[in-house]
Image (tube, rainbow, N blue to C red; front, side, top):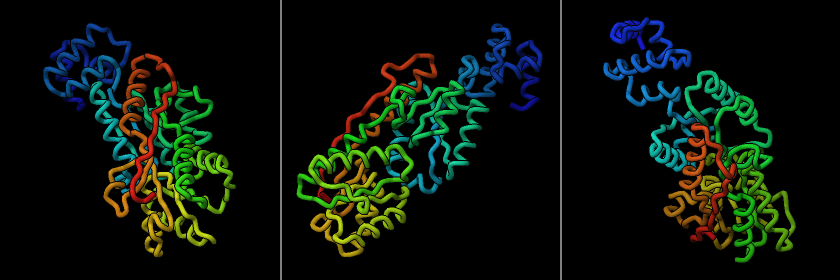
Length: 336
């Protein structure tokens, strides 16, 4: 707020400009009667929205943060994050909270964003995604005692508040389905190798193969970024195998769809030659040819539980249990 406006508020409230400044910064040492007098003038004159004035009283911003490790242009085309962000906004709004989204292209810029959020406290809490084995974000936030909830998994399981699918079980389910429909050379295209979700789904895939007596072949495993070019390149490498895979499990729909498109470009018949399955059951699955079989991970339920858990933490309530699992289901379509 401009200094001139603070002078006017001070005059109308009958306090010093320094007191007005301390109130607007949420200084807890201000006398409560003075604080309420200043906030009443602030609201009456309309210098800040009502929601902001309420946050000044409680020393909360009523903002929750989400930092996504994507370039802004990549985020726009990612169906998982589009659905997740929309669901978090809807759920947060029901509790009179709002969502603040930041993107970070590199790990270094991501760390800088988190440091800035911790320094300024411009959000009351954070929802984290895409955890790693040793996640410096989680270590830093935990050491600060800053409220956060992870959508994903982190060891040990009760170390942080988290909401997740059973990714090992879900990958087992879909790989088992492919084997039972006659596939034997099943390939897996994961996301970046360092992500917990990539490794968990790889583990479920391996466990299912072994349960059917099918040996794990590392040549049928590839890793890709969450973009069309990287997934297509991974598919090209898999097609160079002899014999070629007869099924591909993509770690998300974007990867699976990009791989399927690249396979078709090489003359592969889907699903006759190679079956394809993705994860997330995004709307795109229904509109491609052939339609994509996918694992529905119930994104709205993930977002709802994570948002409710975070708001509970912000408001001083310890969630019980600290880890919640949202069931996944296989949606069968033409590609498999």
